[in-house]
Length: 134
Image (cartoon, rainbow, N blue to C red; front, side, top):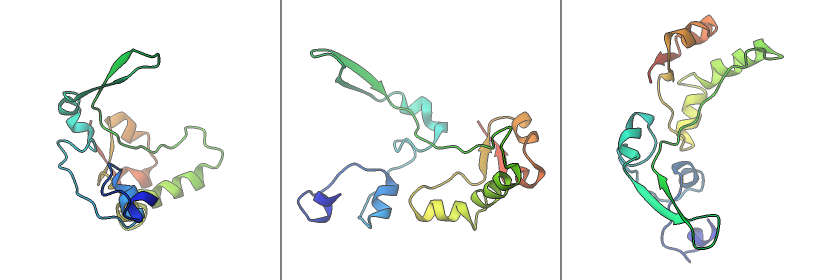
């Protein structure tokens, strides 16, 4: 960051959150290439980069794959009430989701769970904050 901020480097490849949080100018790449949506994993995996391996003279291929984050409610959380309250805040479009977006971590809105069964296991106060999407 210091090289960019002092003008000793013209550009760098960084996460959006790093650029936003350091007040850097940035270009937003389209979803088809930004690795930000697992719905594009079949497309992302078409990109292959060969890098040096662990041993001198060896190489390995790295395939593209989405880089997304998740959050969970621990089944036997020691303070379930506080955990649910935290998730209610984090999953609120005007609360935690807004903060994430403002800090360069654009969330899926609504947030996603992969199956109906998973959604059914959520506390009632969280069910309306998620959608079933693979």
